[in-house]
Each structure stands twice: as C-alpha cells, then as structure tokens.
Amino acid sequence: MTKKQRAEAVSQLLKKEYPEVKCALNYTRPHELLIATRLSAQCTDVRVNMVTPALFERFKSIEDFAAADVSEVEEYIKSCGLFKTKAADIVNMCVMLRDKYQSIVPDTIEELVTLPGVGRKTANLIVGDLYKKPAVVCDTHVIRLSNRIGLADSTDAVKVERQLAALLQPEESLDFCHRLVWHGRGVCSARKPACDTCAISDYCKKLDVKKK
Image (tube, rainbow, N blue to C red):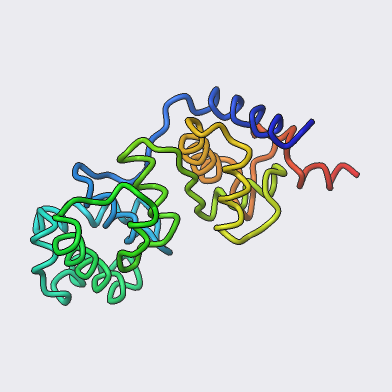
C-alpha cells in the first residue's frame, strides 16, 4: 500500500467516524476566527470559547481592536495563558488589518503570515475555514497522529504540512485535519490512546511495533 492509498483509507474511516466536522473554535466574523486561533496557542479550544464571547462583545470590529488599549485586552484573556504576548499580537494584527488590508482578513497564507502572531497553522485554518481553499492545519494532534499512522515522519509542523499536502486530496485536506483533531482529543490521546475503540488502529505504526 502506498502512502497515498494509506491516506485515502484513513480518510474514509475517519469520515465514517466523524461525518460532520468543523472548527472547534466559535466565531461569527472572519477576524474573530483569527483572534480565537491566536488565543488557542498553548491553550484549549474549550477555554478560548469561554473567553471570546465577552471579548468580542467588548471589541466588535477590527477597528475596535486596533484602537484598544493592550492592557484592557489582557484583562479579558488572562486565563488563556501568555496573555501579554497574545494581547499585543491581537491589537497589532488588527492595526495592520485596518491600515494595510482595509479591515479585510487576507485570503492567502503568504499575506496572513505577515500579521503579528500569525504562523502557518493559523494561516491555513483561515484560508481553509473562511475561504474554502485547500489547507493543511498542523496542530499537535495532527502532527502526532500523522506520525502514528505513517503519513508523516517529523515533528516539525511545516514538514508535516508539506507531507500531508502531497498525500491528501486538496478538497479533503482541511476536513481530514479537523477529523484528526477530534480523533486525537476523543480517542487517540498522547498519554493513553484508546486503541481498542480506535477506528484507524489497523493503520497505526505504534501498534505495529507492539505486535512485533
């Protein structure tokens, strides 16, 4: 079985297991997803979703965030961790969105990664979720599971992104990543994977090692 065949087989199994998937972060406006994703660094999506309603009620637009006092933004996001850095990034990215992009969130990875605090993971999520373009979002779950099922051989997010992009059907890539995230949270955890109930255990390299 080639890696592409393996990727397709895993994709189909995950599709049956999680037929309806979407981004776990709650948002209603494009810039809100950008901000929520920045907040999610080293923080759970559950915690971010608890914080953002009040934050987005206080600062409703890109212009509101751009004009905000960083210290006030800090107060809303303290429980997300690294709040000082994140607050500064949020304000500065919105200043750049306002001044350079006419308050429109860009639709290319190349433009998005020029924004303060935005890396390739965030940029891929934006172009995929907002603009429905092919995207490979490599968070910790995607990296870990991709290695376990033999689709990647690196812990470097950029390398894993490229490896998966070469194997996945472009129109399926974003949902594949979302499904891996849901699977990583609910079944294939880092410390105690539930191998007995795993829908993709037949493709797990870790189990192959155990069997030998």
